Image (cartoon, rainbow, N blue to C red):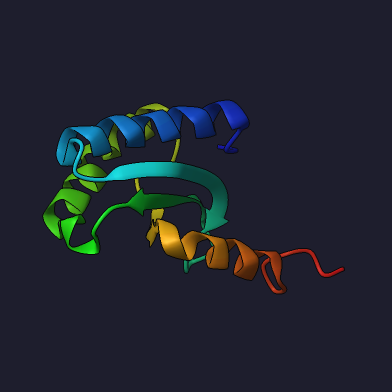
Length: 110
């Protein structure tokens, strides 16, 4: 299934709700971007980039895993692959990530 803007918004909302449930107010997550992608086998999936503002040690791996596993059924119900490619990026590093994504091979070669 193609990842439309409407579906991307639904996925973002699911992530926001589950991140809030697991982390409360200990971290701020913004932005959360959802983009089409492919996994290592070339299968269609999507990339979720979650930018967090707060201390990195607050990003508890168990809570991150709880968010990911809690989304399996809701994503499948939306007709999307149950697994995603996720990246948690500190807010301070996000501008660099955007710059890197704009350069080839990821960005459009001007």
